[in-house]
Image (cartoon, rainbow, N blue to C red; front, side, top):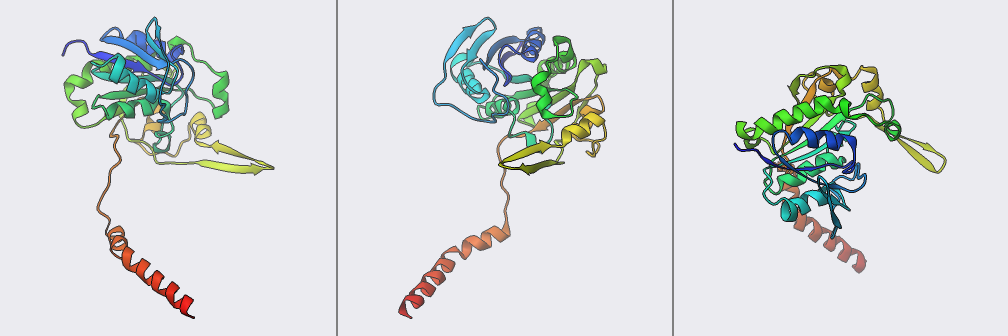
Length: 276
């Protein structure tokens, strides 16, 4: 196909280093327009606004809103002919099934799929022990080289190869480039969950112990999962679908069938009580 028209967004903000790394890489293979938050919108999930302010920016548009705002505004009003939406590159990994709904980066990709536009969410793993350390760490542009290389390759080839005929979006996570050349591994999101909470007086501290496992390299995730691939120095690519699915549940059907009769029995018991 001809060069794709790409809408590029993120959740770290339009001026972030990772965003510029992807903009430069994707501009080599497509027509890229930035439609990204003016400020950091990390971990906002799929939060949406009623109205957003948009201003022109040298790479496209800066939006006073969330990543999902950017995708809706972009696809409906600013880049209406987009062939592909790319979100990233996020400073920090978005790995594991439990993270997908929290991430602004992943949520932007999910939002695009409801417009029937293929999408990719791109993040880079930074090996730190605590989530709080992210506020003090900023990787330089060179650190994003492997994330940018994989994103450019997939954006250039996935559409023509029919990848999005079998999935809605790709969740891509790459190690820092300082770890060396990283091959691609097709993965599934890990289901390992190690959030815990400790009460200290009037406060409760929430802690994700996965980061400690990752920093130590001793994660219990099995082969084939996204987190295992990244810790092993590979680019994890998970092909995912966006809409929630539903299946036939006989037990729930049975409850639905007895719903009215259960209420009739309750009303009858109440009437008997009043008579007494």
